[in-house]
Image (tube, rainbow, N blue to C red; front, side, top):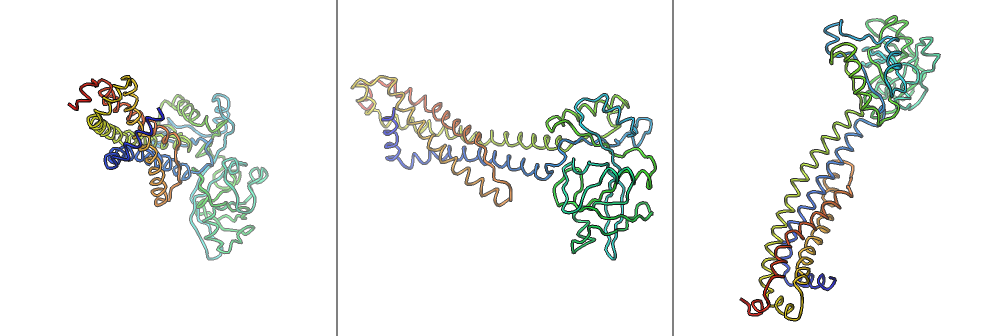
Length: 397
C-alpha cells in the first residue's frame, strides 16, 4: 500500500496541471466548510459576549399585553404571589421583586436622565453586577428605606467627570417629587443582560415602598433558577403556570437572557450547517472531477495495467492502486483546504473584529468527507482498471 502511495505521488508529479485542477475543487470545498462553520461559531460567541454572562440563571416575569388592557386577567405581584411560586414551582432558588421609574438625577450643574430601579437586598450582586467602587445595599438599607443610591458607570461619569462621586449627595426627581440620595456605589462598565449597568441607577425597594408608592405590587419579578442549565425549563414552567392562573397566554411576559441566547445560537448554528452543506456540494463537484481525471488516467496507463496483470497482479491489487491514487488526491486537497480554511477564517474574523474560533469537528468532518468523496468517485475508474483484460491492455486497444 505504501508503494502504491509513492507511485501515486510520482504520477501526480508527472501531471502537475491535471493534479492541481483535481485538487482545486477539494481545496475550495474543505476551506468553504471550515470558514462557514468558523464564522458561525464566532457569531455565536459574539452574541454571548453582547448579552454578557450576568443573570443567565434569572427569569423575568412582567406584566403582559393582555394584563395592561384587561385588569381581570392580570396578576398582582404581591407577597402572596411570591409565596405561591415558592410553594408550587420546582427549580426556584430565590425570588426578587423590583420596580422601575424614570428619574432625573443632578449634581451641581450636571444632570442626567435615567431609569431608576428599586431592588431588594443582594439582588445586584446575585445577578452578577460588580462595583467599580463603593458598596452594595445592606439589609438595613432596605428595611429602613435609607436614601442611598448606586449609579451606573455612564451616569456617574456624566455627573462626576473627575470620578469623585462616592459619598456625594445627588438630587433625584421622580414623578415631580425631589429626593436627596447619597451615592454609596458606582457600577463597573459591563455587559449585563436585562440590567442596565451603564445608564441605570438603583435604590432600595424599601425606600420605594415607603416614600414613592406605598405598599405597591412589583412591576417585575426576578426568579433565580437552581442552575443555569435549568433556566429554559423554568421559563416554560412559569409561562404555563401564569397562563393557567389567568386563562390567557398574554397575561404576563416571561423571559430570560439564557433563553434568548439559546434561541439566537440555535438560529446561527442552523444557518451555519445549511451553508456548510451547500459549500460541501463543491466537494461533490470536485469528486466528479476526480472521477473524470481517473478515467483518463486509466485509459492512458492501460499498458502499465496489462504488464502488472501479466506479472501476476490480481484485480484487487489493481483496484487498490487506483483507489489509493484517488484517495491521495483528496487527502492532499483536504490538508491544503484545512490550511486555507483556517487562514481565511482568521483574516475574515480579524477584519470583522470577531473572536477567532476554529472547530476541530468541522476540520475533521470536512477532511474525512473529502477522503470518502475521493474513494467513492475513484471506485468506478479503479474497478474499470481491475477488469481490464491483460491481452487487450497490452495491445493498446
